[in-house]
Image 1: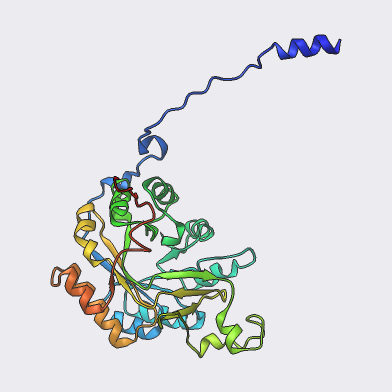
Image 2 (image 1 turned 120 degrees about the vertical axis):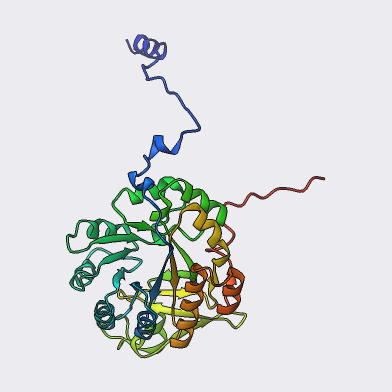
Length: 328
């Protein structure tokens, strides 16, 4: 009987559906294009991202009508929000890069500030704030990792007002992404100290206290500034967020000013300038230079030379570079 069953099974091919593989799908077949793609382009806008009260005061004095705030200390953030609101400017508050289960209290504290919008840096913040009736708009930051038009369409489809593409794109890849989405919904960073890495280990607590975490470290991050010095002598600033996580930023700022004409032609209209520890004089010089760039009063080369930044966009020339072997 076993032999008969075995012979019967081995000679019978199991039924299965026929599979077809196709290539060359159009993006619209995968993620439909948003209806907002037909919206008329607005005038170019410069939005500063600020991390100190001194920077906020300079930006408001220069007349910026929208600012993004990324503060470590929530009391200082509250004071900055009051100043921005008193000046009649639009207020956007940035969330931390990482939020773990049990840290939802950060969202509630941001809600109590009643900002005009949230700069969401993780998907949990996107989900929370897009359902919050007290938050008018949610902007997606680079850490949502939109590296192509399909990802960008998916994220924008969640209800984001704008999205900042990931930093590991070169200009050609960035323009390709912009061609596949409503480019007016993109926000491109023109000036920044690139975030090199983000980690749980707190350099401040390790070096400046005998404690283990925020409960017993004495919070030296509120009174000291720490840099990491590399083998070349460059000092990379270390910034702490509300969750006591550290981000190490590149010592030298980089500028994508040279990309501006092509980005404008592609339809991008929102441009960000990120500051880290610049003082009042440095903040004013940088913001004035990029404002003049958008107004056509300075060339990209002049701006890059004036602010002393590296001429590049994002992490590198891009991670998808095609390497060709020389012919023998």
